[in-house]
Amino acid sequence: MVRRGDVVLRPRAPHTPAVHALLLYLREQGFVGAPEVVGIDGDREVLRYIPGDVPIPPEPPEGGWPVVSMPRLISVGALLRDFHAGSATFEPPAGAIWQGGAASPFEGALVCHNDPVLGNVVFRDSTAIALLDFDYGGLSDPIWDVAIAAQHWVPLADPVDFVGEARDGWNAAERLGAYCDAYRLPRAQLSRLLDAVATYLERGRRGVERRVEMGEQAFVDYWQAGLGDRLIRAAEWVQEHRYSLID
Image (cartoon, rainbow, N blue to C red; front, side, top):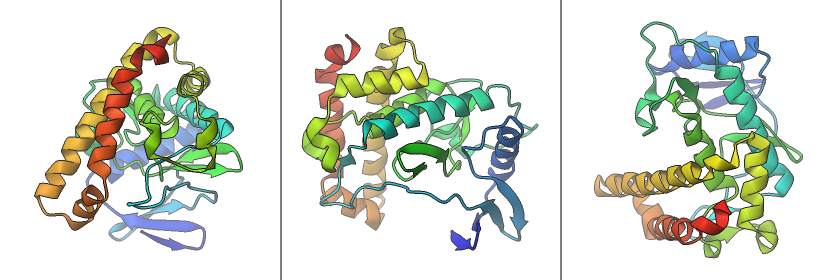
């Protein structure tokens, strides 16, 4: 990826036409919280650069899940809500290829982001204004997006693995409730949301393990720095606190 002035150039891929169709449709619907398609330049796609702040935690071994402010958390829920509303009537082009087909274990008719994690949300001041990197976009159930974002942004994990100044005032149930209210997720769906979080953490751990076994050095380094242990602790914490989060 290369930035040139007010545009960003990224490698093209088989799923690029489908993603561009989605991004153009979102603009037509008035949703501006996603990259604007400028065009194609040879083997690269050209997107409008979105100025703002993208919070990314420190890399291991100091890394973990950052605790963002409550206004930022709430704005992530609102951004996802507006994105799903914008994509609700999108009809993918015939023969559309989605890389994200393998990114979600849920069947669904809505094109979701499938990766609203740290590094893929742009903020201005205390407000999430855009989602980045739609490479994993594809048909899914919106609960998958909501669960992934909840795990990263609430965050739903063992507090021993938190970083950031806001961690001292962290209250899981309060933060999860505020996030779900912003998304307008009915409380009756909280159990399903936590099931999806558990699935996400388990799939994440297995996926990292596979890449470690394949010898991918970045993932070997992450694993040795404790990523696997953090994912296991997060899954155990969610299971242990499940009922207090739902009540």
